[in-house]
Image (tube, rainbow, N blue to C red):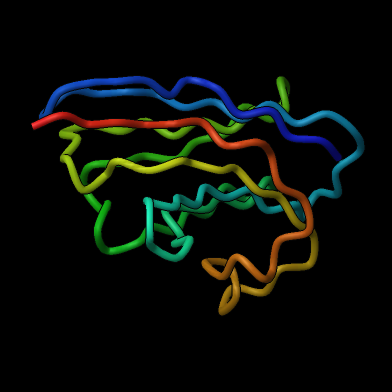
Length: 125
């Protein structure tokens, strides 16, 4: 599986952005796709994840109520709708994918086998 992320940009506080992650290749029905982000000088952190089959979604506390992860299985694409953006959301955003990820690890970067290139999101104050 290969992942291609897109949709980043420069926005102002309170604006919205939608990131996309297109997957190519064969994926199992229990494939999980997630979004992570890394700000300069900080460790990579989880943002959101979604299971390909049942569509269960998971969010970091810092983005709950503002970000929405969704998937379009027909297009093998996962989206991250980001609303009410804040300067602290500024980071490089990465999409990731993996199989056989148990729920307790779904927000852990180490659980994912495949990573896309990052897309920069910058939120100005």
